[in-house]
Length: 206
Image 1 (cartoon, rainbow, N blue to C red):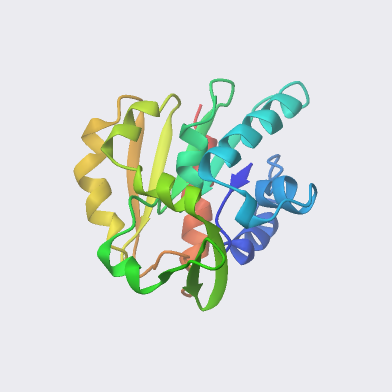
Image 2: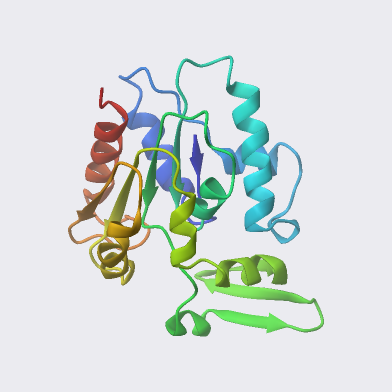
């Protein structure tokens, strides 16, 4: 199951094609949790996604032999804050921390709407609660790792150094992979292929 942010839809489509020769079936949780139920992004928080993720895990628990989770960007706190004790392992794609100072240029609070506007090439409306929870994502969340986890960082993103410094604080089986020449969404040529290969490699471990 893949939990991602609003910019990762293309990656998920490519992942579906990549996994066709395998026994793994990808499920897009953003589609399941938002489109299927009619929920809008402005109605969500990170912990909303965590609660919904628990519901989805329970509903699939008896249907699949093993469940794996992939979280991109803000998808990772949704995984860690959820009860993921029944899943096999986790891969996190360039997981985000607290919004950096450089992020402020993309964020604007609109008082009339009581919402944040994030301008990432396209404008998105985000609740204050989600931004507040985003600000809580620090080293303390590392204590929530429960299952073997691989962190895959983009070389051209500042998160890479942060994760190198924090890997020692993760108390479960884990490792860190860096994809060369990649940015946060892994949309540079060939970077998706290596991203998927390293993801599948972790899931296929005995």
